[in-house]
Image 1 (cartoon, rainbow, N blue to C red):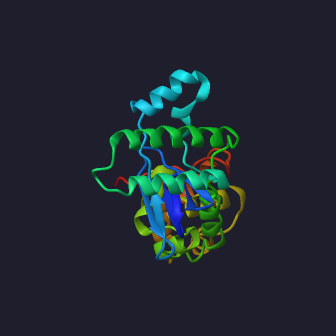
Image 2 (tube, rainbow, N blue to C red):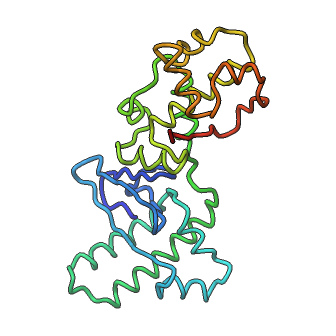
Length: 249
């Protein structure tokens, strides 16, 4: 995606970035994505490339080690150099002639722009870093006793409701609130194993109204009641392990 004006915010489950006249965006072909203009003058030139496209095959044949397919599967934002900005303007002007625009011209621009993006990506090998998981878990950890709502999570992460759900499914295989609950119960498990605090107190610290509701939720997710876990000592707590999530009755 090439910015022609304004700024366009694009987000996927794997990350988010902004596209403007200063930045190019790469979105994998199979990635669900959401994008919206930050301003009324936001415009994009979108070039769709697929593995079997002639332009992609041509680049792969000329430069077998180009890794173009791998590049197209990594969401990222790349800085747009001024000389490429001029090319984008020319491409947009020619392609704006409508559905009757010359297919040969469209193919020519697609090939040229794909080559230019590959050359840029080769100098910026690392994809855009996604820090949403750290931000998500930091917010939940800071609000164990008053868990954040979906609206608060959306504001904190800068995501729409649908993007938040898609991201949580991709990262945790759970809905946003299920992921929040799993994180709270992960901390509750740590407290049960590493402290002698009363179960009712741990329930309160992790946002439950009372011990019975905490016990029910804990047993549903971890497969054992808090009391039984504490009596059996359980396995050593690994704070880096992904929380187990199970919501079957």
